[in-house]
Structures are given as C-alpha cells and as structure tokens.
Image (cartoon, rainbow, N blue to C red; front, side):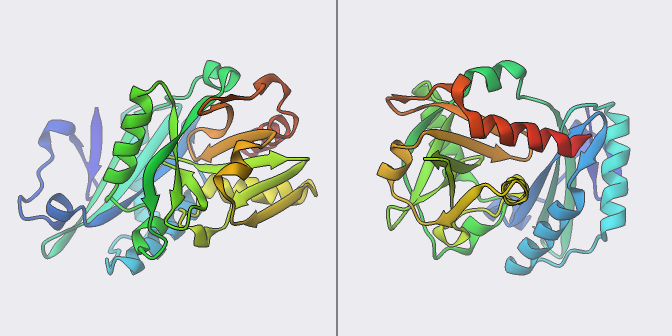
Length: 269
C-alpha cells in the first residue's frame, strides 16, 4: 500500500517523521476523510475549506494549494487502485516545516450494516463546548477513540457524547439526527460538535424536500423518546439506528430516514 508524503508517493515503510515533530509529540494537526466512490472523490472542495478553517484555528500555515492537494490525492487513488473507500488528508506541524500525509482505505460500511442499523450507547465523557478542538477535525482524537472502544467492547457500534451542560452533541465518528412526530432534529454547532460535511448535505436535502427541521439543544430524554435516529459521516452517509442503549427501533419502518438515504445516494450519480 502506498501513501503520499508531501506530494511524493512512498510505500508505508518509507515514511519518516522527526521524533521532535509537534504532530508526534502533541497531536498538533488536523485531518479530513473524503469519500471515494467508483474512483472519484466527493465533496473535495467542502473538505478543503473546512481544513483551511481548522488550520486558521490551530495557527497552521497551509503551504499547499487545493489543486496540488487534489493532484496528490488522485495520484494516490490511482496507484492504490482504490475504487470505493476513503482518502485521509492529514496536515501537521513538524518543527520548522509541515507534513502533508495522505492515505487511503477500503470501504468499511457494507449493505448489511444499513439493513441491521447501528447500536448506540451513551458515553460518560462530556464534550467541552469552550474548547476550540471540538469544532475541528483535530488529530487530538483520543477521547473519541476511548469512548468508541468502550462502546465496541459492550457490543455497540457507536457512542454518543453529551456536553458539560448535558445537551446532545454527536457520536465519536458521526453527527446525529433524530425524528419525533415527523420533525427532524439535530444539535446546533454551538453544542460542541464538528460541522460535518454530510451533516450539511443532509440539512440541504431536508430543506429542499421542505421537511420540518429544528436545529437546537436537546437532552437525553428527547433523544431516547425519538421515533427514528440516524447518523451521518462522509463515509457512511446516512446510517439508521436500531438500538439506543436498551431501546430498540424498527429500522424497517424508518420512513423519513429511508427518504433521506435515497436522496443522499442521488448526490453520487
């Protein structure tokens, strides 16, 4: 498997990073994960714009322009002969320079996952709404990893965060929506969530279809009593939820979720 390091294609074992790199020592950097379908990247520009905003927050100077980053991505996709999956663009501080590391992975979400739906648990970790890191794709991802590891060990697929004010946030790898009485709800960015690319696409589709949408602050009970729940991220798109802790949902009767899944799939035609 090849990677792209600062624009050069290398085998994984040829990668070298300084032991004094801030990326290695402190997780000083950020990343984006972009969907690849039939060898084509989707929503590349949206991801790069979010990366630029993240670089500004982290005081990182992005020394590569969009065209070059896209060129490096396309070269890597071709070299790895990747048809369906994801491409990760990582940008990090490395003493007096920067590291642009691009890697690929195969698609991990299968048709059976959507038929069964995801099982969710509540995380005991609380999101800090005052931290700038919760609003970007920072390399400081350990809280998410630990929360998801704990959920997986308990037989769940994803863990859901609440913030320090006990308001609903997001999953460790996803944004969350829920439906009650035909109204679609999703947490506001100010709750301490990542402004997901697919979250934005779903909101656009909801508005286009003139469905009822409410973006705001919600507590655990509101989520627990939902009629439908679904998750979004750039690789899974829209994932139905079959269980929330000990509550089960009839994935086969998720009418609004199914509508949104179909509409999102149309974006890739």
